[in-house]
Amino acid sequence: MSTSPLRAAMVPITRQMRAYFAPVNRITETPTIFDPAACGVFPLDSPPAPWLDLGWIDEFVRYYDTPTDVVRSGANGLPTVQFRGTIETRVEFDFREWGKVQMALAGGSEHMNVLETSASASPEPSGGTPLPGAAVQAGSTAIQIVLGTGAASAFAPGNLIAVDVDYQQQIGYVGSGISAAYVSDPTDVNNDPNYVRRVTFNVGRVVEVTATSLILSQPLLAGAPAAGASAQVVVAFVDREGGSFFQEWSALFVVEAESGGRACFYYTRLTPNPGAVTGMSMKLGVGLKPPKSGGATSSGSTVSLGSGGKSSSQKFTREAFEEIARPLSSVGLHASFLALPFVDTNDGQTVLCYRSYFPAAMAAVY
Image (spheres, one colour):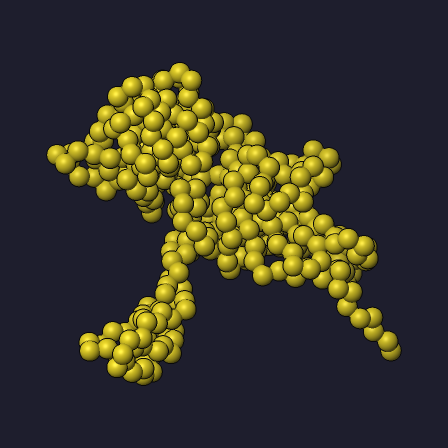
């Protein structure tokens, strides 16, 4: 009996996986399409629009929970036809990086921008009554927000800002470019004119303030501000456990190939999975060692972090006072999603996930 050796070009090898998300049109339930023929081998740092690079992820796991069953016939009840039961697919992973979109996806419901308030504002868990916004002027772009002479001086380099229109008692999805929340009754949000800016994904970081404008480090996700938009300072982001709104996004997970080909997992529509564990995880990292100085001695120590029972042998430096270096901890955002169905127009089949593979150059076909 002879065996064939592994053919290296056919073995995808990777150290990490990268996540990209793009908005779903919530009104029409139209996803963002990933066409492997058109853009399958894009540079990982430059995804095609409107895909957003959300960084490297850990602990990626896919669950295919669709059962199969058979139709039996004959005297012996032999299987004659196989069929699929109720289709269901889930995916879980940890974001390594924290940001507006990452937190919204891990939290699952409305994601709030905490708008800057005055010292006298009544306290609220997601932010009290904010300072008035600055009206955005004509000529603004996705990266330059024109406020006019004088108004720009209220902002400073480093500020986070939310740029969107006033809430005007409308019912339905709100938020420019990306549906950020759903309002079924204006009284639910106290007819707050700032509500859209509380939840919008149209946020940016100010890197320069001119006499009339704010220059942002990255383009606003919705592009140039809509007519009637205002800008307000954001001091933090906050998500909440609970709520009736569900995020819904298209997702693409790319296996970075160190040898062999590239593998991609494309989900047309992902929504948070309320039955799974989501939130934050603490991961024990590399031990931190303070610099040695004269007379310092080293000794061993064991430091335990959290309730998981994991411990790590650490070295600490004993100075005139005792200083124990605790291990660095990576605070990850754990996200869990349920895949929603999509009808492939090429053959009318109902699909939950597409797995595409781009073989390495000159790799065997099978």
